[in-house]
Length: 392
Figure 1 (cartoon, rainbow, N blue to C red):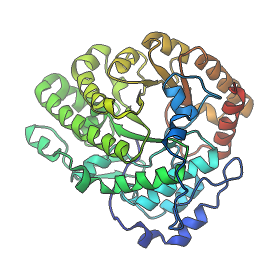
Figure 2 (cartoon, rainbow, N blue to C red):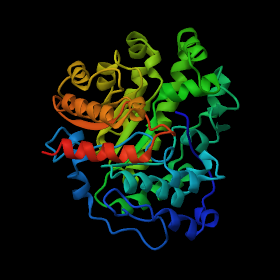
Figure 3 (cartoon, one colour):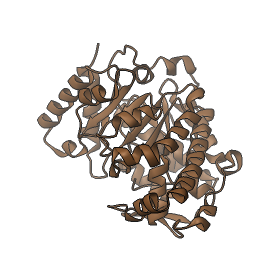
Figure 4 (cartoon, rainbow, N blue to C red):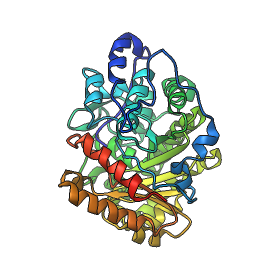
């Protein structure tokens, strides 16, 4: 992931009511705003029953839906001009610790695109920053770690999480959002142990993950100890979001496609399973996603998913065949296709919906995240097309 999370717990002092009010004027695709982050008040909750009966959660549970639900990974931010305006001058990590700002940014794509779920505006590096790891999100680079983990002494950076002391800002933001969203589900998320470990070991983004794989093979006990600590950290991060009101969670293992199935099963899968098992009894669907994971899909499902995210490299019906009928699927429009002429986009969307109709449950998404250069109006048209073409 290229973006991330952090600190200052008085967002109103930095933003001011007028800054947020100006941004909430952006109409949704149906001409309505879904809520505001101003102090004027959260919209009254329609209750958990309405959220549980949403098409999004019904699809995740492989139940009949009125239309295929759709959301976009990285929909909160990036391509939206209102996001760039409210984030101007605020470092990424800092913006993620301001509840009012998190609420506003999370709501923006729901208003504009009309998606079926909101995704919590945060980053997989937030828990590390919250426990004191010295890191920054560098624009156009990604997470940069001041003291990479290269030996046993480096493990001391990854201390146990104190949910109340370390993540109080997350609890506050999620609670605000649940009040604003009403019947729209909120997706919480966290970084899978391997992907987070790759940043910690490499010191930043890496194409080949040389240092990560060298530790995995050459110092397997150290590698396992690091992933075990990160599993506890991510599990704690997900629990905070769920307990505050998130109704589904996604575990991002963005870079795990760099591994063979054998290495994944031997070195990584037990730790991802630990995370997913930790939230299994909390009553929310669990989505498991990675990039380049066509050969890993059955293992990622078996690690503890209810929904398996599929990138654009494998057709949804084939992905479903590989993982079995006990799992819903999510995906999988190639993000690059969004830059093509509309007839091309429309044809590809309809093709994906046809593939998804052959699965036990389908949530439409991109095969990875929204790119900053995407036209928001095209994303809105995709949402409208998905809803219209899949109406039951």
